Length: 313
Image 1: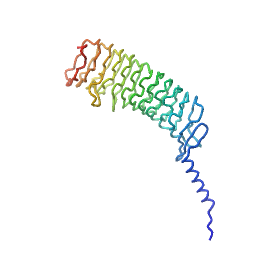
Image 2: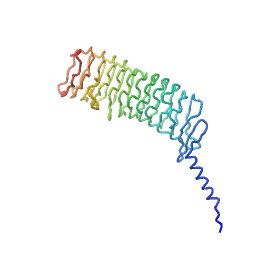
Image 3: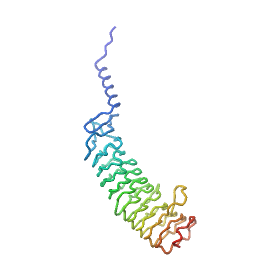
Image 4: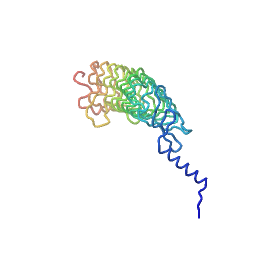
């Protein structure tokens, strides 16, 4: 007895095979290589000529949700990302061509090393939706001079803007919960406002900012990490709130590292808060223009070498 296959069943089988093929192999559409997965497009490569690159929001009628081709856009001079993605991966790390980024609202995270070493990057527009900037994301972008941080930003990880040319006044948003090691080290900022960092305020965040003259630390912060302003040779004014109990705090067991204000040669006066309980070693080492330091009455612990070196008493 013969068995017949219905046209409907045959169409279903063909559609299933095509679907599996689309998911399994990279496809191309214009300048883009991509994969389709569960009604989403994942861009995996770029075959265009560079220049001003605008990444599409949809391919084949489905939204682009990820862009994962490592360094695939290193020929671009500007990149405009689609609002359909949540995370930006390292698509142009170390590019010598990239000058401008446009990051639309909807993007929440910039992955570690995403644009590190992009020495000609000058312009970055951050959206209000952005919550996290990964470690070294813009480290070494030596021509990056200005940033406006969004009001909802929660995390700036270690070395994020280290060795950039960010200048002028820097106001960190009150939403910030994490400020990583050396986050703004060796930049050209002249003034900084540090909000209450509720989770992790790490080592050396503003070290070697040679043009920094003024720093204001918001109330509720309970410690100033070691090395925070180390080497800030122009620093003249520091406002320490009466909630700080520990200056020179080192979150890990790393021994006696650089002092919080070590090498601040322009610093003439510093008022230690009456709330202070612990002073780690060398917080004022090399601050040769400070003539007198008054240790608050309630201070319980002074580091091995005290707050100064032999030059200041």
